[in-house]
Length: 174
Length: 450
Image (cartoon, rainbow over all chains, first blue to last red; front, top):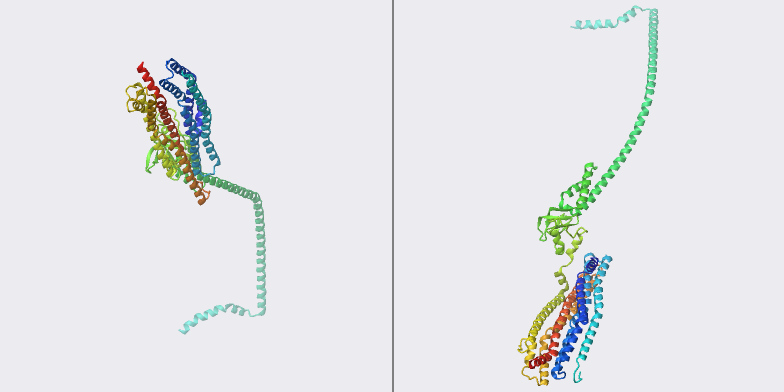
C-alpha cells in the first residue's frame, strides 16, 4: 500500500502524463520480458523442431529445398524479431512523453504568472520543479529500456544466424 | 359785605399776637431776663436729660454690641469644625470629580475601542460566506459600529453573540435555503450546502461568495466532475463523504475560472495549432484505416494459407499464387522471377499511407516548433512595446508557444507509435510474401506429389 501511495504521490506531483508514462513503461517491460522468456524457453524447442524438420528431408539441395529452407529461416527470424520494433519505438516515445509532461507543466507555470503576476518566485520554482519530473521519468524509463532493445536485437540476429548455419545443405552451399 | 370779611381777619391777627401781648404784658427787662434764665434753665435741664438719655442709650448699645460680639464669637467657635468638614468635603468632591473624569475617559476608550472592533468585524463578516445565510447580521453590526453614544452592556453582549455565532457556524457543515445566482445570471432560491465558511455547493455545483453583494454565485467554470459528485450526493447517507474544500475561502476556486478550458487552450494555439490538430486528426484516421485494412489482409492471408489449391484474388498471397499458377514447377528460374515480380507488385498496396503517417509524425513537432517561434516573436513584440512590467501581456505569446509545442507532441507521439505498428504489420506481411511464398509453394507441391 505504501508503495502504491508513493507512486500515486509521484504521479500527482508530475501530472497526468506520468500515468501515461507509467503505462508505457509497463508495456515496454512486458514486451522486454516476453522477448527474454521467449529466447530462454520457447525458442530452443522451436529451433530444434526447425532443424529436425530440415534433417528429415531427403532432398536438401534442390530449388524447392532451398526455398523451404529459406522459408524456415524466415519464419524463425520473424519469430525472433517479433515486437522488437515496438520495443524500440516505445523507448523512443518515453523521452517525448516526458517532454510533453514538461511542456504541460510549463503551461501551468505560465498560467500562475498570468493570473498572479511573477512576484511569487517560490510558486514558480515549485511549478518548474514539478514540470521537470516527467522529463526525468521519461529519461529514466528510456535509459533502462535502451540496453535491452539493443541486446535483444543482437541476440535475435545471432540466433537467426545460428539456425541458418545449422540447416546444412547437402551440396555444402550455404 | 366788607365788614363781614374784616371780622375773621381781625380775629386771626389777634390770635397771633397773643404771646406778644403776654410779653407785652411783661414789658419789663427783668422779667425778660428772668424768663430767659428760666428758659435757659429749662433748656439746660432738657439737654441734661437728653444727654443722660443719650448716655443710657449708648450704654445699652454697648451692651448689645458686647452681646453680639460674644454671640458672634460663640458662633465662630461653633463654625470652626464645620468649616473643616466643608473643606474636607470640597477636597473629596475634587477627588471624586477626578475619578469621574478618569472613568469617563476609560469609558470613552472602551466605547471607541468597541466601535472600532465592531467596524473591523463588520468588514470580516461581510467577507464571510455566512452572510449569505444570515444576511440580517450585517445591519445589526453596522448599527453597532456607527452609533456615537457610549456603549451599553446590551450592545457589547450582542457583538459578543455575533462573534461567537460566526465562530461556531464557521465550524459547521450546514444545509440552508439561500439565494443563488446561476451562470445565466438568474437569482433563485436553492438548497445550499455549506462547509464552514470555506466552500458552498448548490445542486452539486460549486458556489462563489461575492462579498460586495453578499450573494452566492455559481462558478461559471466548475471543477472536474469527480469533485462535484460528492457534494451532489452529500447528506443522503450517513456514510463519510470526501469533499474537496477550498481553504482559501474561494480564491482558489476563483482562479479556476481564470484557467482556460480545452477549447480556449486550443484557441491559444492559433492558426498553427489548428493546422497541427487537423494534421493530427488526418494522421490518426489514416493510421486507423491502415490498421483495419492490414488486419483484414492478414486474416485473409491466413485463410489462403489453409486452402492453397484455390487461390483467390482478394488477398496478396492469393494474387501471388495466381500469378505463378500457369508456370510449371520445373521452370524454376521463371517461377522465381514471377514470384519476385508479384511480391514487388503487392508491396505498395501493403505499405500505402505508411510514409504519410511517418511524415505527419515528423512534421507535427516541427509545426509545434514553428508555433513556438511565432509565439516567442509575439512575446518579444509585446516586451518591446510595453516592457517587462506586466507579465500578463507576455503570457499570451508564451502560451501560444507552449500550446503549439504540446499539440505537436500530442500529435506526434501516437502517430509515431501508430506508424511503428502499421510498419511492423506491413513489413511482416511483405517479409512473409517475399521470403516464404516460394517455400509455401514448394511445400505444397511436395505434399501434392507425395
